[in-house]
Image: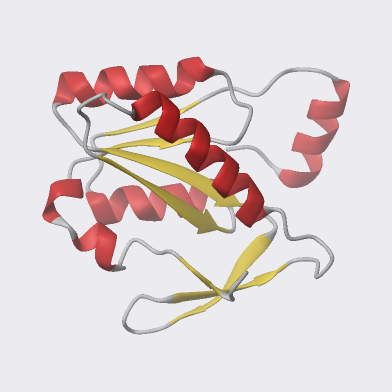
Length: 149
């Protein structure tokens, strides 16, 4: 994995067709209803759909003036973000094939809430769709230490 990451300023997101998008934040294995609701709203609003995965194992180190973000892994032994994004993209492509929606998939890095907020601002997004996490003791402990979106 390279030490650069996607940002709202790069070429895809300067596309005027992506302005006023519906953003859906997903992770692999999330219930399909999250994506189906995002698709429904994108269709109702006649808006493009931007599928976002945030790699929380990396953090932003600095941003170039041209918008290129450089990132580094939190732990050099953990690099799951690329595989998760590839898996997510495959899942999404199956669902969105033939939907007629304009869509793209993006991987962001760092704090999920801040990354999604930054993207939403750059796209002047109409709506952000997120799912809920499963409840349980393990999930509550993980959320305590890593935070929640």
